[in-house]
Amino acid sequence: MTSPTPTASRHARSTALVVAGVADLIAICVFVAIGRRNHDEAGSITGFLTTLWPFLAGAAFGWCITVVATGRRFAPNALVPTGVVVWVSAVVVGMILRVVSGQGTATSFVIVATLATGVLLLGWRAIAALSSRRSR
Image 1 (cartoon, rainbow, N blue to C red):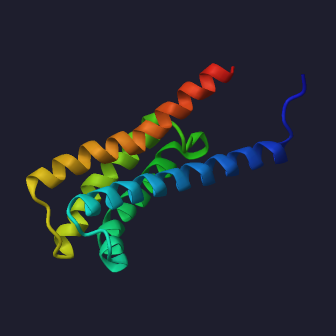
Image 2: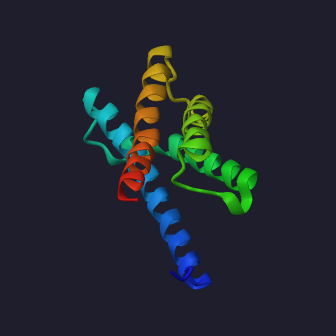
């Protein structure tokens, strides 16, 4: 069996990066959409975006930390460290940005946000890891 060409490896890595980024974006959008729906605030696009941006910025910060820390070993779909760093950053940076922008950070919201984003951001990575192991 021959090893993949550098171009094929680069393409696979780029694909994994895009898929992981889109999966994280979807996970955070789902979290925000469910939260807004549960509070009867589902109808406003601007409200959705206002709630969304701090968590997206936090997740992006987590991606940056992981890329810098792992360099060439960066694995965007890895549960550890990428998933954990993105999750914690989404919550911590997201809450800081919510405070700075005048949005609420009630203790119950912080707890729910931590649990829900953890399930969503780590959950898809865990499923992908299990699926990958089964296919081998």
